[in-house]
Image (cartoon, rainbow, N blue to C red; front, side, top):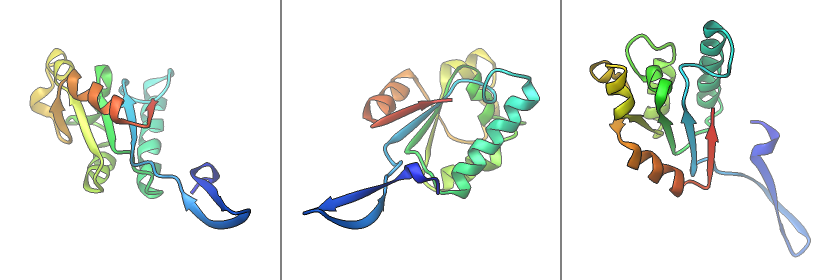
Length: 134
């Protein structure tokens, strides 16, 4: 794992065991059908790598919320379905914006996660100790 996921606990000036910071109260917001502002192929390549590394390193947020174009990553034909299924299998909650799915006419193509509403996304954000937007 990367160094920034660790911290030291000190007790009476004695260094104790290295402990891992938990990502379990982290929420990731996905608002694009890929990652970053670039060519579609690069965006898709980056998001595949991102979710693959979360799985490989067991960096598991509590929730990943998908809205606007981000919902397209959880439907038929998405390049990250395998990675998202694995994250879900490991206990990560995947919330898809129902309004966004309906807007893009993708509701019947959902392959992973649960269809929720903006209230679910807001609740996840406010319960989180950290929110990451990608």
